[in-house]
Amino acid sequence: MSKTIGVGLAGWGMAGRVFHAPLVFATPGLELAAVVERTGDTARRRYPGVAIVKDAESLFRRDDVELAVIATPNATHFELARAALLAGKHVVIDKPFTVSSGEARTLMELAKSKRRVLTVFQNRRWDGDFLTVSALVRAKRLGDLKEFASHFDRFRPELKPYAWRERPGPGAGLLYDLGPHLIDQALVLFGTPRSLSADIGTERVNCATDDRFEIALSYDALTVRLGAGMLAREPRPRFFLRGDAGSFVKYGLDPQEEALRRGETPPDKDWGAEGPGRWGTVEAADGGGVRRETVETIPGRYQEFYANVRAAIVDGVSVSVEPEQALETIRLIELAFESGRTGKNVEVHA
Image 1 (spheres, rainbow, N blue to C red):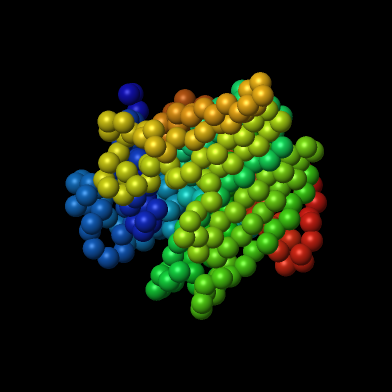
Image 2 (image 1 turned 90 degrees about the vertical axis):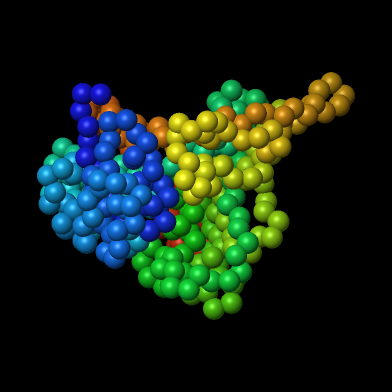
């Protein structure tokens, strides 16, 4: 490749260590140049040659950093991304984009004025199960879709000590954590709904933020149900789709996150592939009976995100995750909180 883009990573927590650094390192044409690590030098030991800096301001001043990745707590996304853009850097922000739609619009306007690439790490668009569901929907394998349900369920009754996501504050709680994944996927498939309703609550003892949510998005002839919780010993299906010609059900989570945690990176052998025991099934009417068919999961491909970011910087192609789409996700989160507070259905205006 004719041009290598230097990447600076702000944030060496789980998102930075597990997702961003390995995927940047695995992307041809990108070089992990510097990492903000306030104490220690584990980043350098894992990636020899990377520079360690102690604060984001130092990162954004570096001449060898052309692309800044913001993988810090949600409440800091806006200020850090703004500082990076003002320093002339292209910017990737880990989801959620920001904690308010107003902040998102400000960043979009600034990126446009600076002629910088701005995008959001909505990596779950490249989950194998979502790629499979998308193919089924596009091919109308289930006929006219009537119901689409998507859930991220966990069983973690104990709180994590000192975890910022479980302490009160802007951008904390489960809806800001997992909601961006579920809402973004729904928007990719179906666009903006007419209205929504939400039930958002707290179930675990001494939990000070929301740790459960259910959101219903209403379209003309389709209802989309999105949910997540922390007390699901037996998780619901990851996806359930019901149409007038059949249904599809899929259990289990995409394997790429666990592979990254184990230290694997694309294009390792069988990257993103699921075993047959975790494939979903279609059931459809077949004469007087029911036909049941196993559907092979399309391998996931998180590597496409950063390959696209590099192409956007070098070749001027459009980013896969447009900031306008990420803004719409934040706007629906705000409306979901409004619905949760009022107990009412909320109209969604474009």
